[in-house]
Image 1 (cartoon, rainbow, N blue to C red):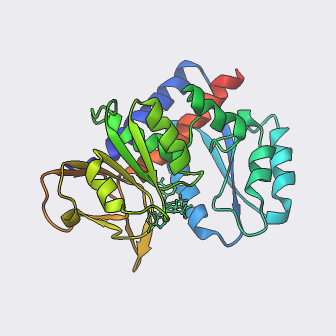
Image 2 (cartoon, rainbow, N blue to C red; image 1 turned 135 degrees about the vertical axis):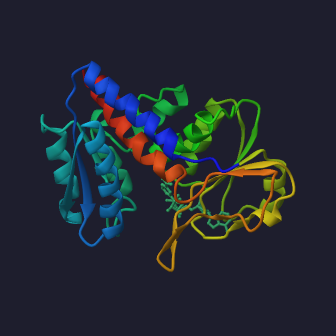
Image 3 (cartoon, rainbow, N blue to C red; image 1 turned 90 degrees about the vertical axis):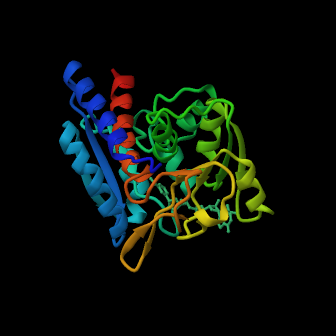
Length: 270
Ligand code: NAP
């Protein structure tokens, strides 16, 4: 089975739209990207398309790296700005800890502040890291129960693997986290029910190498010869493998999760 993201994304977007109408809310968010980072600009434009659909004002603004912290502080104090997201990865010279410390947790659209990340430990998803939440929701909305599963997360970044492994624990999955120094990943893959894959290398894992029943949640995004591809390659027909496609899988849901964060932050401040 191919586990698609579009329907999940549409459901989340319609939940947001309904909540905005019901509570008569207006939301204004600001997305900051750095000059020359066209990839982030395109990414923000795709979120803006969804924001327009649900009625969230999503303003995309360029910022100079040297002025980032001042701009975050200005927006923290701006009563017309409900939430802020900053393009990642940050350019050289930007200290990620300084950025995450400087953002007001109540305006932290991308869930990067230590306060919001810490709340995950208490199963509090008032606002959640969007990619991690999308990786779980794409399964849950498709009726896949995580409780009692053995999951393998191949990634330990602060953006993906760390929050995702915490959230999987919260779902009563037994979690293994792998990274570039992990030995014998093939064995760990075979022993798991679900593999969350975010290495950032096209074709890192192939269907033909998997022997047992498995769900692959492909989080990787790679551009190869102008084509967007994930880390997983279904190089044949394998009935025992269910997987999320790239494009059209986790990434599609991530954009909706960011807007859900905007709604939750607005509700928090009410
Ligand atoms: P990252 O910080 O570079 O993390 C890559 C992770 O993969 C690291 O933990 C790294 O291990 C591990 N890794 C690298 N080579 C490996 C190998 N041979 N075997 C096992 N593990 C290996 O990147 P990221 O920001 O987390 O993003 C990862 C991927 O997810 C990228 O393709 C990115 O585009 C995609 N992404 C998608 C979304 C979405 O919404 N779908 C959102 C964010 C990111 P070490 O820690 O040891 O280096």
